Image 1 (cartoon, rainbow, N blue to C red):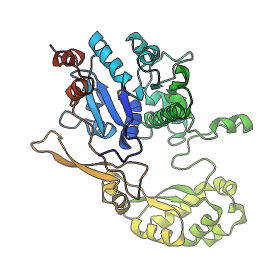
Image 2: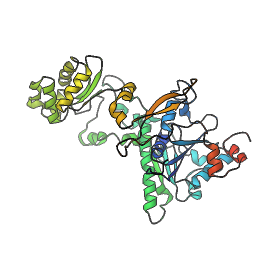
Image 3: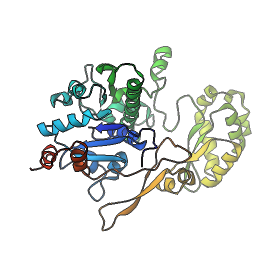
Image 4: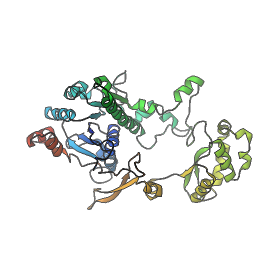
Length: 406
């Protein structure tokens, strides 16, 4: 049951594919919103096939589309278009991440949605936003991460820029999408009159979402002429803070860059001479000698196994942690204590369902993750229930809207 969750009673119509808009929908669904995900007939969201190792639906899709309902609609057909409008008429939020102009081309743009629901909140996620010279240009997270400033900072200085390993640009935009939806709903509910359409259309660009996370990248450049560079596992101007190998092949991240923390770290590794050096009392001095400090720290970490390294650092009050892979996360007691890995029996293409763990819900309420109600649904699993039950369509109309043969 979702009646006790913060967004219970909110209905969201999700028209997006891939990661950005579905991430926004997932966040809203996690906290009780009814999210109706519209997919193409027969093929569905392309994410169903991304990293698909077996079966017919990827774990990536199952993860990003949890707690949602899936219906199929042919939005290019008149019947499908009408179904979208009928669903929008009884929804609070519409999410979409098509290229700008696509919804308008299908007769499903802001004006048409506003005509059927003058209070609807429309969240639009695109590569470069709905306006500007690049608005019509397609783009995925990789492009946004490059143009938003992130890619230039990731990797080693003597190698080409790297990715982060996940579609972080899409995920950031999805976070902004969920925030925008809530902002639009709050504005609507707290205003004496319904806000005008242009205030209910929230415009999120992937490259701008990434850029917003770049901290003082541009101000530092304009104020001081600084052009930040890739520094590998370090952070510009902050030392010592890096990843270090241990004797047993494991690695740890140590963040010893606070002034008082630095002294404790040097004591732990047996280098009081560095801890008491006045030239190393501040980050600026430590950054200038970062190679020397990293060498001293890794000389110590390589002399003992990871568990022993972490125990010594914890006792000294030095922030540190192991570098985890999936197996480490599954076995970790902290993740388990807060229900951050939740298990479901899922079809993975074998003879019987497999027991699969999925990420829990953030933020935690009451000390533990909100339970994940369901993983991403099979394609069109809720079409008949939504179109026939919610909208009251007869069977023939359901088939026509869903792109099936009548």
